[in-house]
Length: 334
Image (cartoon, rainbow, N blue to C red; front, side):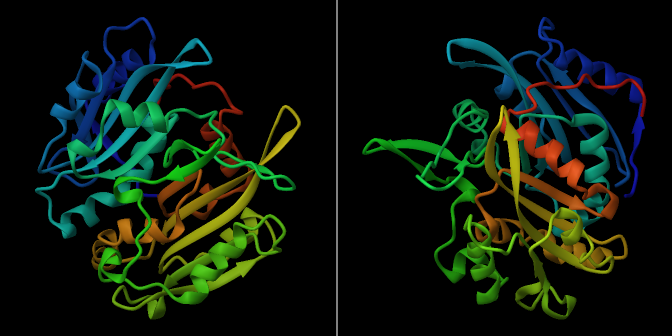
């Protein structure tokens, strides 16, 4: 993974720590790139919550935000953290591609963990307090069918009551595309769509799939490269360092003796991938998500196989589902 440097790191860490403290009046922080794609700095921090943070996002820059808000869960006031990855509408796709190489390092070192990750935001109007309360409710069960394990989709779904049962309604760029136009310039092989459907079936042996652009050409369809019945480690072994790939896996989360099915989405950008391929594929994000959603955990821009382990994925799933109901303080070390 390419590492990022921070201009006046102590200042940024101090602002993040303030947001993490419940009693602090500082409830949001925004960092952004300097003129270098591998350096960031503190842009602003303050009080006023989400609306104030949105105004600090820069239209011509990639920014990273963290906001603290409170939510009532079963009559108990709980503190939640939302991480926002912002791509300013004034940025070209080539510049976005150059800046993407350090996103994973920035997220892991400075803004993780969070209860909700909002990645690739380009419009402030798509981020509202109401959405955060819905996306942040980590205990909502959207589907429970006799003979099947319970599912709880976190961070991507709104639940609506309909005839006594919960149904899923996706919104914004999470809405499933029903026509080719919604998928932009990228197409998806029918085998991939069927494999994803198979993985969603509790009784199907296929547990994961890895897909990539045919011939590693972003102008060609996304096709199945490998699929299997093993775990995350088996899936990770199929990732190619020279390719942009997308993976999807079914895993189990166990909390208080109850097993629940969770789905994990992974965007892989191999360490040998060139800037042009990164840039060309960066504009496909919405279309790719429309094929793989819904999922509980999203791992975006991963470029090191060592990040994709059974333990790491289990930790991310546990945090997203609420079975790991804690948030670590930000360390003062880099």
